[in-house]
Length: 269
Image (cartoon, rainbow, N blue to C red; front, side):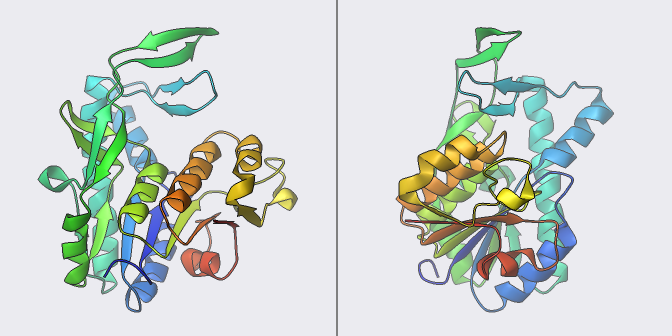
């Protein structure tokens, strides 16, 4: 069931996303076409860190990309957060009539490689961090996901990859792009807590409606903070053959349907 018609949706893991509205919409869409859902874990992860007394820290690269600092103790919390978030999304979809199946534990569908030396700006100086358990995605077990789709199931994936160093924290947006590319998806929708890409963030009147792949460098210049990762994900998905990518607001009713109907920022090859 991969190919034409397949829709991959990335649900943001932050506080702003309306999970119930997104799942209501996905349930309706999932009855008409195959779907794969990739979700974030930020809100649940932050909650577990607070409960454990663990400080939430980020690493910022010299180029300005920010990511969660994941030393071994935090990695263990991250795995638990991924399992909880996955169960939350899977249950919400099942309650709405979708045969959702989570890919966690021994069934992680993403393969990755740990970044053993990360250059990060710490107190104004570039340092090398060696104990982080985040990584880059090297492959997707597309056959595993296709088997689920062939049985009319909706795969639900956390931003987590298996590696020779154990489970890794990977970027959710780029994980969604990798999955969409591996399955030759017709479209990828990335839901966020903003309306899309703004030329002058946070000015909502500066929303960029269309970005062709030839203008992706301009889009990366306009993107601020986490939006840079989403634009990179759009670029990666399109270069892997995904038909279109839309970054849209996940705080509204029918967020996926709205995105497919023209809301948000649409990226095309």
